[in-house]
Length: 357
Ligand code: SF4
Ligand code: SF4
Image (spheres, rainbow, N blue to C red):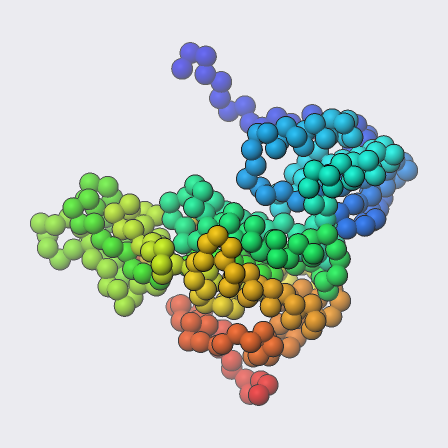
């Protein structure tokens, strides 16, 4: 402990700002999108800075990081940043460097885009690369979906921006609960109880308290320090496994993808909204998840055809009605769509004669 350095916090961000941003901090007059992926900000002083936004796979190697640093050294005075959706932004103050940078990015296969009414990067999670509770992979599905929707990353042809997010289990690390289209990993099997291991690995009261439906009880045999699960009450959330390693509930054959739609976080035009269930289950199908990719494309295309300009996916659905959404997207409506979780489920039912046949 003698040489230990602690509680120093992150380095101050101002150390990494290009001089033009430092000089004009808080004094920006306007911005415009010059073309998909390229923004221009103009300060009150008349100073200008251009940002070139580039897609990234989020999980990157140090070699990739070095490559983008080399580009930033060459064209941006050594400055770049990452966006909150893991895109990379090259910050260009010398306008003459804009076209050479774009040409080199193109040569390197780094896609420019993610601005305006596009499908920008997919906020996603760890999946089978690093987490122990996923029902689906993250990076694999994201790559398959972005390959399919690539034309929408570098263009502005949608009615509004479409945020797609992925979480590999219902812990929903990230943004799936508030995205236009969300890909969520779901289990479909109750936990398998490893009675002999449970008493050594788990704190039983915490495990019992982790279950949102009260499905877990102490084992009736007082000599067996374990739990039982009332399986008809279990909806496979996997929370108990997060608490207790002796309750694994994953099954690669039965776990899979659920799609949610209609969430947003901005307050523009309508309040923020949670995303809601659209497709309850699509099987895992690595490495390209074709059924998931096709289902997302279908929702996106129907939205692009039917929505008014500036209308987000959720606003479009609210305008046409959920029954029409299911009809135009050709999604079967099933019992899984009907909320049955505690008292607030009531508020999601229709208490009106207003509906479309
Ligand atoms: S969403 Fe679930 S499985 Fe994925 S990283 Fe978060 S906790 Fe792990
Ligand atoms: S998976 Fe979820 S619902 Fe099922 S027993 Fe565990 S905590 Fe309860």
